[in-house]
Length: 200
Picture (spheres, rainbow, N blue to C red):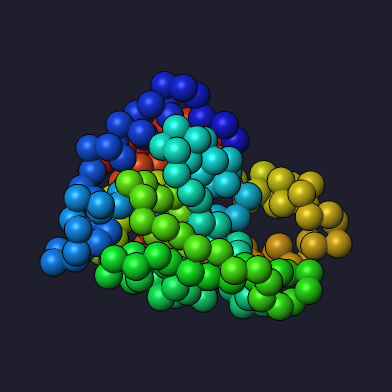
């Protein structure tokens, strides 16, 4: 999924117009506050592509929740929790965020990453806009595609042998989104082909 220049421009303007919440009220050096953009939605909907487009225009880093989940079986909840603990809470207190990428093949944590304090930060993945992220988010974007299309994209990327993993993940994320009501809380809705569906 690639969004058009017009849609991308609308999203970028929304980011610039939104309040910067990292660090939060009372944080040090408020002029260095960060606008956090959260791109959430089911697996295979197009989040990573959109996040890359936004980051290119905003000249900022992207944190992928795929690097924070502990593999297929862990489900999406742990990624949001680690995002808040390892990245967002330190940034809110004026310190860089730090995490180690989880290697799904090796089933172990790999190299460390540092997330510096910058004017913008994009986070993408299932759970990127979980409720615990709300205090820090400037803009939340929900991206959604039909289940069949998402599964097709996923298997095209990961191979047919990943089908059972994908089906289990889709069940897990459905539970997560029903509980978090992420789509209802999002500021902007896009479909899986980059078309703007709703902007509050």
